[in-house]
Image (cartoon, rainbow, N blue to C red; front, side, top):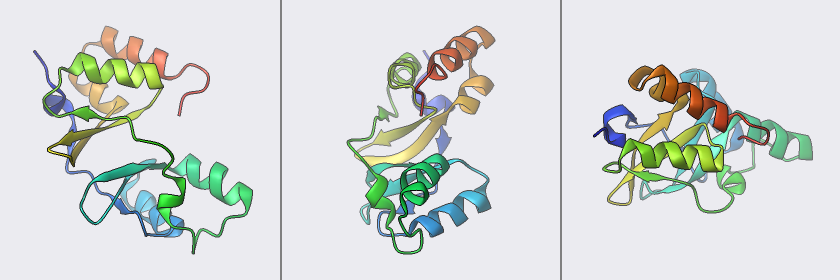
Length: 141
């Protein structure tokens, strides 16, 4: 049985909930990633922030990236998976919610991220293809 811990990218870099969107964009650029977890001082996950969120939900609506904290775009409860869960649970959540990156939690702390790239590197081409197809349907985030 493969568990989420087996394929996740461990110790993801977080953006602080009080850090500005411009800081988040700089970190994304530095790391060459399209999304960052938003974490509180307690390292607990508050949400996910994507480069698309910054452009479509902030800049397009006139929010100032220098003064708008990342928590502003952390809407709702994040979809997560436990580090000890079977990988099928993670895949089902990614498909159901059409999300490309899934935070991995252990003892209420963020310990990893599972991305489409992690799936492609660790699982069969058939599983990867089916998952990516379902995630990529219209409306995916």
